[in-house]
Image: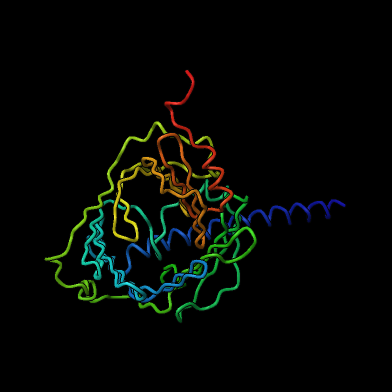
Length: 322
């Protein structure tokens, strides 16, 4: 009997140790991928699929110099490219002959990953390895992050075994469906000719130039009674949004994130043309609601149940009883 008890204890302790080692390994792989995306030189093409929408993008990245530089070129639809140098991003809209200049954007785009908090990471996700397959001809390490509740999505990642670079990522719904994925079709890691960073748009001397600087703003009067576990307020800012017709407007943004996902509450004056209809596009969900003289848009790459619960939890301090 004692041998049986010892064997049972050994199995439990051994399983716990393996689980911890697995979590450490996954977290280390995510951190290695984050650094690789910033520091390596690479170029290639990747495919993004959101629901039924599919887009192809060419990327050129130089991380070996200062500042970090990256050029993205859309290979579908309207000619569009962006060039990021450090904290400044230039967006070239050739058909409209328009140049957008944005500063201090903190958004992490594929294959980049944001910094993660390990304690929150471990509380939100169960980690596991699964059988990997090559991506863009490169051997991979595949890991899954399975959500512990209905307010987060699950994630799957394929990392390059040699460099650590993220090669493919999938977002998985609560029903186990892949609702969004992005991955390299081809990629070369190594020295990148600096000439490839030059925009194809050429001279912009006669173009219309818009400065869309993200500026800090005091939105402390707005608060949320509830957010998904692990999400914290990371920024409040004023930014200019542009619609499909080129019209722009200034809005306030309250940004929350848990590292892997984000959600935002956009605050602007109410107007009659705003729509209450929910929107779903891949992993992205959005709802709008009127709050007195304000219009609020709640959007994020979290399940719709979380977006609706956030919408119901918004308060503004001026309305609090004293």
